[in-house]
Image (cartoon, rainbow, N blue to C red; front, side, top):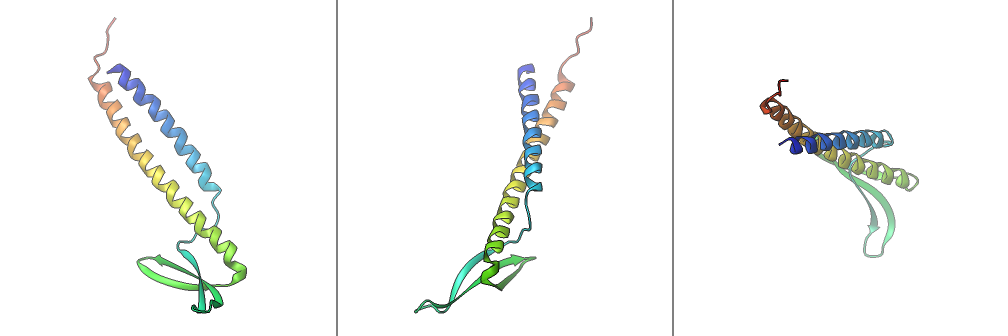
Length: 118
């Protein structure tokens, strides 16, 4: 039981370190936007009249917007940053759940361990 508590305490430390790494990564994220960027054609059979559009859902509403060719690179980066943000948040939440469970287990284990009286 004491071995398990020591392992749990070490795991809690590792979780805290990973959460700090996630926080540092979050500060490096720029502008974010959801969606997917696609190249469309006014005449798809001849592949002429190319233009870009971004499609996304925000607040349960689907939207599509045209993107100028000069803005494509920036919009791609914003979409990548959005996916990075979501991934980091998912990982942070999973670590938070694990941290909470381990903390509760450690607290309940500490309450059950008899204290040695000299």
